[in-house]
Amino acid sequence: MQNNISLEQGDINQSQLRQDYNAQLTEETKQWIEKDAKYFLHQALSTPVMNVLSKTEGPFIYDLQGKAYLDLHGNGVHNAGFSNPVVTQKVIEQLTRSLAFTPRRYTNIPAVQLAEKLIAVTPKELTRVLFCPGGSEAIEMAIMLAKQVTGKWKTISFWDSYHGTGFQAASLGGEEHFTVGQGPMVPGAFHVEFPNYYRNPWGLTDTTAIDEEYLRQIKIILQRNPDMAAILGEPISATPVVPSRYYWEEVQSLCRRYGMLLIFDEIIEGFGRTGKLFASEHFVTPDVLVLGKTLGGGLMPFAGIVTREEFNVLQNRSIGHFTHEKNPLCCTAGLATLEYLLDNKLVENAATLGDYLMDQLRALQDIYPIIGNVAGKGFHIGLDLVKDRKTKERAVKEAEIIMYHCMREGVAFKIIEGNVITMRPSLVITKDHCDMIIHALRNALEKVSLS
Ligand SMILES: Cc1ncc(COP(=O)(O)O)c(C=O)c1O
Picture 1 (cartoon, rainbow, N blue to C red):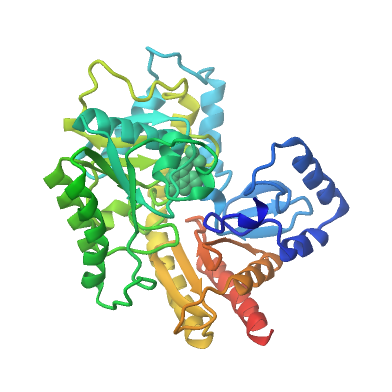
Picture 2 (spheres, helix red, strand yellow; picture 1 turned 90 degrees about the horizontal axis):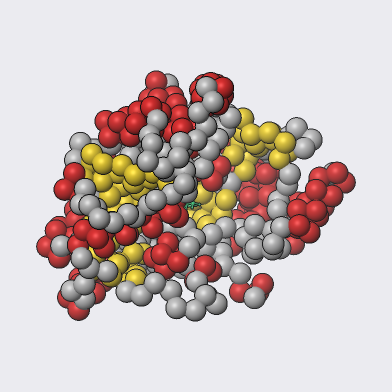
């Protein structure tokens, strides 16, 4: 099993370089890591852990020795910064009001205020919300809604995508890591390839020609499956590949033609990550927008869906029904986070500094041939590292060396697909933080160029 560990989700945690990194940690840290491995049920991607954290604040995470790492991953919860003091204060105030929970059949003011605010800031066609504890459940609700609305039950989603755990989300996700050994998954879940302009298998260079090939995969399935309820995807892939607007416009028109819902998973990409408040704004308005992670401000687990008025049709059915679907603490955190992002113009910061960071990365690409491609939008950036620019062979080993070098310089990120360095910093970062990333990366690139 271990030898087949998937590189889709992240860097592997049992490599020699990981062991070297762990070896230089203090004895105290090592003991906590060992205890963690002893008590938690082992999972390939979560145990053993990399380090032990004592604090997460702003754009940084801190280990037990107080060493700070600029965290370019943050699991997507840190758009407004970790432990944001304004959000924290609002949640404390809510706690002291002795309204930390509302039983079903009752509502509370923070829940209604968050719903109202989300409807105000999402595209104008989206007017109804439903909340739940986590992203996987929000995906579940989106698919269940699509089935109820259309009366159909099949789905199309993308290979290599992650939409969470649980049978529905894992069935629609495109990673075998979460499905093998589980027996039958949710039936009718078809998959196609997400557009990839840099690594398209036809060797095409014309964007529209590439789009047509990827759209053809969807059309082939649709022609043979009249029961299709929805197409689910992230507007921009995790790696990230940024599709053309034409691609999503065409997918949307296929949805209209075949009577399906278009669902965008913006659990990572929402709340300013891509330089717009919602990534859909770069493309088209979906029928269901799925939000999570930053919705809880990094303090609370929280997620939800926002959808169109015409889909408010569940008169005799429920698709959520979660104990915490209107939790006042979660809703307070969500509202405070959203207001913080808007008041402090963090979306604009992601757009402006994202461009700056991309420019700096492209300048590194001019110097270091190992950087095959720089892609992304806002603070959702990926570097595809290659052994050879012609063959585009993935530079897996080198990516890992670079990652651990940057860790030592206090810059932490995740590698996806074995060779793609992904950068998703908090939206609170400054130009100095961007320069810190470039500085660490340049040193690391120098190191791999010499080795
Ligand atoms: C794009 C995407 N969708 C869904 C999920 C699942 O969210 P959660 O872990 O809150 O269930 C994740 C989590 O990483 C995600 O990145």
